[in-house]
Amino acid sequence: QVQVAESGGGSVQEGGSLRLSCAVSGYTGKNTCMGWFRQVAGNQREGVAAIVGGGSNTYYADSVKGRFNISQGAAKNIVYLQLNSLKPEDSGKYYCAAVARGILCRSSFLRSDFVYWGQGTQVAVSS
Image (cartoon, rainbow, N blue to C red; front, side, top):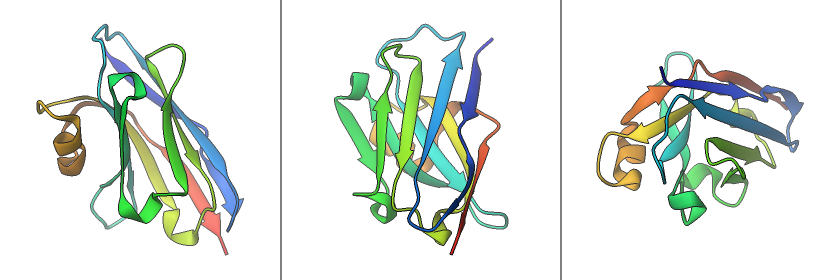
């Protein structure tokens, strides 16, 4: 059984940083596309960043480019999301997802189309 587990959320002040971690267990695929998404209550889930090919390709939402960084751990089943220069509008529940349904990681990221999802970790940024 595949499990996706996020950790590292919390509350910070505007301008602060957080590092989210995502661990995928029970899946043995290689070069897996993995992504981070966020959702604010009442809004649609939106893609934040995605990574594939052992980190050779990464994708970001325009709103987080230059501030967030997605990376893969030495253990390829772990993905990190470094959140810097946080803004109040970055607040929300952050979800990790693994294994794109589509052939291309980027298009699955844009459609939030992944097979496995975690339960999410909360990020709150205060001004």
